[in-house]
Structures are given as structure tokens and as C-alpha cells.
Image (cartoon, rainbow, N blue to C red; front, side):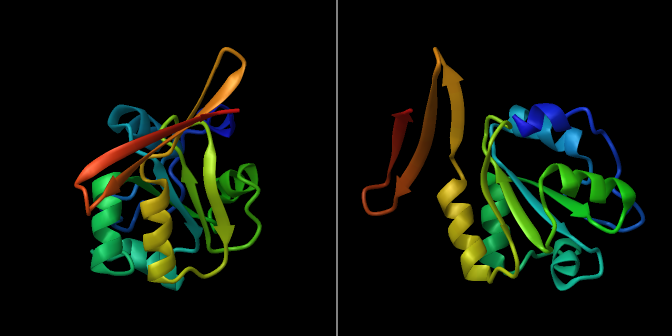
Length: 164
């Protein structure tokens, strides 16, 4: 439900003078895209001039494979933790160490992944594959976790739902 609280924060996170291409800089707009495209949100919390911040500003994030996964399956956002509004958003997410990666599921309500520290391109590729179809919803007092997985060997998609 963090997304509900944070949707009231519409802001530009202090990096408007740089070109961040497909990366959203406004949390409210990013959440609208999540709902519109039915894709999870991949968020990078870091400084603009860090290695990861520079990777965000480049034409290819980490490597071609990661860039392809992001463009195909995710809405993406960068939060400049050196700006006042970026620090406030990081605080709302409980982020105190940077860089921090967060994935919000397709419902735009649940953090399905959050971790601070360095991530290799392989680690990012793995988490992108794992959470690309995650969606958590609630109905009738129970929580439904839905994930879809593509199997290259059978060329089919399997959807798994789990009620808690």
C-alpha cells in the first residue's frame, strides 16, 4: 500500500537538466504507466553522478540483455537521492543505503523486491526475469499472488496463483 501513500507525491526529482530517455523521474507518472501498461515498476535510487546513475543516463543500462528486459517488460524510474524530493521518496521507501533497487508489482501496490548495494548485470537480469509478471492483489480477505513464467523449451506461458 506504499504506492497509495506515495501517489500523492508528484514531483521532478532534481535531474531535469539531463536526458534520462525512457526513465521516469516522476513517481506519480510512473505509477500511471504501470497501471496503463500492466507492467511492474523498476526503480533505481542513487546519485546522478554514480556509476549506476551514469548507466541510467546512457543508451544502454548495464548491458544489452538488461536493457532489452527493461524495455520489454518494465516501466522504469530513477530517483536522484541528492535532491530534496528524491531524499523524501527514498525515506518513504525506507531506503538509507544506495544504490537501492526496488521492483513494484503490476498492481502498483506492492514491493516485490528491494535491496541496497551493488548489483551485477547478471543479478539484475535474474531479478528482472523473476519479477516481470508478478502481481499481488487482494480479494475477499485473502491475498492472491500471481506470477507468469515463459518456458522457452515448450514455448508456453504458465500462470501460477497462490492465495494466502
